[in-house]
Length: 410
Image (cartoon, rainbow, N blue to C red; front, side, top):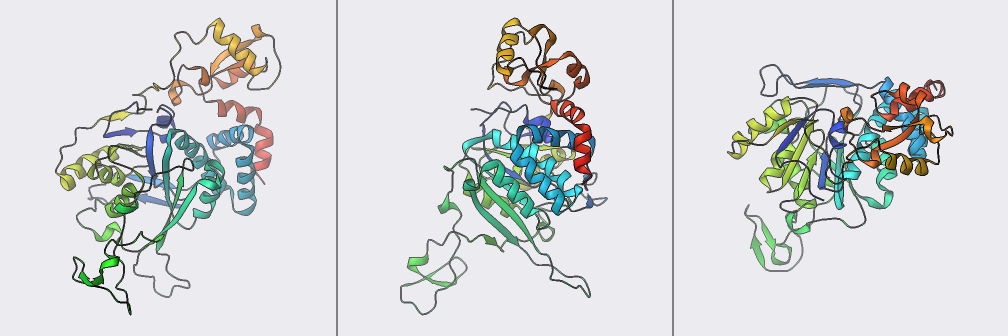
């Protein structure tokens, strides 16, 4: 399936609302560097090129997350059990964070082609919780690698533990068929000792032997990429900016030229710039309009390209992989939905005669829904009034509010 957006597009808005409008199975590679539940607030320094970019990485059980949790409980009981265990083991904050991530990662899975991959970048604080979440959503058989990006840096005086100087990147494939361009990511072997062979030279002048000249596939610990704070040519001041070399390796490994790359939390758009450098198509999503400004700046400065891509709001595209209905509130659609739901209201789960049920959108257009049959349902009049022009998770949470609040209180 082809994407229903233009190459070099930055979308402004919540990535969930934007992704809901994207065609299924149209993306080859997703890289995301989302918030980590670090309980910290981030802001670019005043005077830097990213000044004005900021986000809070603190989490609580607001009404929307409670609503999503209710929807997960109804439609994905395995994920619900996992989130319940997280609450028991950790905290409401971690559960709220994972609820936020669950609904977005499920949408990302829908967007990936069967041979596609997702690389989720996180830190050790939440990495093991996210790994289990990915196991449930993608299946443990689709786990490819846990990559450890190691780096060095100064410690604090009188610290009472080892310095935390690594990130985790989880790689999962959409299926058991995936792309891996091993010839594009090889690195030199260290000089072999005590073996015969014909002497040769690498570009850096180090002696090696002919049979090692092709290099090797890297291990899952990556220590040769410096944090971007030490790379003046790339640094824009964005608080969680990652180095281009790191993204280059990921994109080279798991995509081909002209493939489609998506970064749903693009920030200062390093993945987008790397994709452009490597001849891939790309799109980024960020809640801050600053992302589009930084793409313009970096395309010009780092690639010498005047950025002419689209900067679109999240309501600028509609799915083309599902035929829109000429009239969604039709007798034919009502009969189809009545048979599919067996006359049961999709909210309160009570049985009604046809005349007492109303056609409604599961996800309204304001949140990325469309006029296609898979986004329609039948609700009784009472449930439809409660839901209003809000996503279905709102109605689910209202109907289960007392039970869910008891659960969330532990």
